Structure formats: structure tokens, C-alpha cells
Image (cartoon, rainbow, N blue to C red):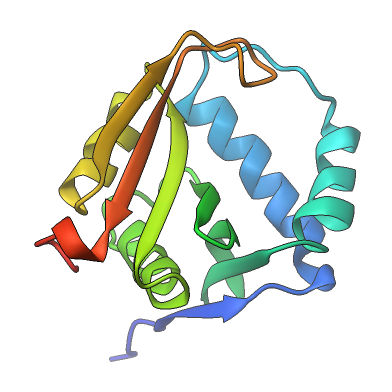
Length: 159
């Protein structure tokens, strides 16, 4: 009987850019089919390689060499958290949030789309509180978003 490969959380490198971009595109298409696309696949690949991996921190959840999810941090800003379609409810998002809270142990904030009920429920389960609702003026998609914040001082849910 073979053991299930462990999921590890690792700092992403430039060699991960293509796989991260493919995951990002697949995840958004599956989880957010209503979201207006404002960038081509090539633009997304360039953004991942030359912006996301060059600034802040990008962490990946890897199992048997395959990237199953990633998150991007810029100080206290949790900028991206996406999972490969079919990898939900395995604890991967929770593992990535543990890493985010290790890297920014006092406070994190993030934006998610108001219509993304699954993401909103996930963050609320992990101690994030709704701070503000916006009409979509501050994102490229023009989609109403929600600002969430986690603070160690008010969070009972440390994972």
C-alpha cells in the first residue's frame, strides 16, 4: 500500500510561473464563470512571471511535484489565493492561509468579489471579518468586491 504524497508549502520560483498562470486561469474560469475577462492568457502569464513572482511573496502548495494552489502576499496584503479546480475541500487553502498568517502574524487584509460566496465563507471560517463593500470601482473587472481583514487580536480561529 503506497502512502499519499504530502502536500508541502514552498516559496515559488520563476520556474513555477507557467504552472501558476495555468492554475490561475483554470481556477478563475471554473470558480468565477460570470467574471469579465480583462486580460489575455499571454498577459496573465507575463503578469505572473514579471510582477507577482518579482514582488512580494508567492507560495505554492505542491503534491508529488504538482502545484495545487498558490497565494501571493505583499506585506499584510493577501493579494491572490487560488486552487486548482477539483482540489477544494482538501485543506489546501487552509495550509496556504497558515503560511500567510506565519508571514504576517498580526494582520492580513484581502479583497474578494462579493458574488464569490465560497471564498467569502472560507475566509470567514478562518477568522476574517468583513470591513467594507465596494461597487467595483477599485478593480479592473468592475465587479463589486468585499474587503476582509484578519487580526490576531480578534481572531479565535487560528487554524
